Image: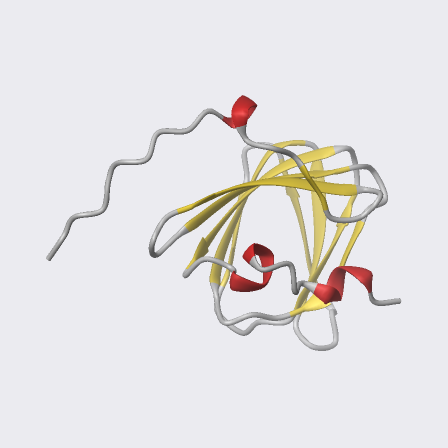
Length: 124
């Protein structure tokens, strides 16, 4: 069995991808995990969605309000220095309460982000 090479990256050298007018991101992907810097301007909305990937969201700067569950009635305000764990297949939506830098960790990697089929960002 071949061991994959060690990956060393600098965030400053990773291209910034525009997701919406208010959301951009940078991705680093391994075989079983994905690490993302997600930049959201105040008022940005990540529409309600779910995915089979387990997710940790760690806020470095700013704050996000998460609406959890299919009805969105369970809310969490996650601020700088705080982490939210979202298990597989849990419905969730987010709103940026401030300009925010969030680090998302997914296992396995988000294929829809990698192949640009994350259409839920553009639903009205």
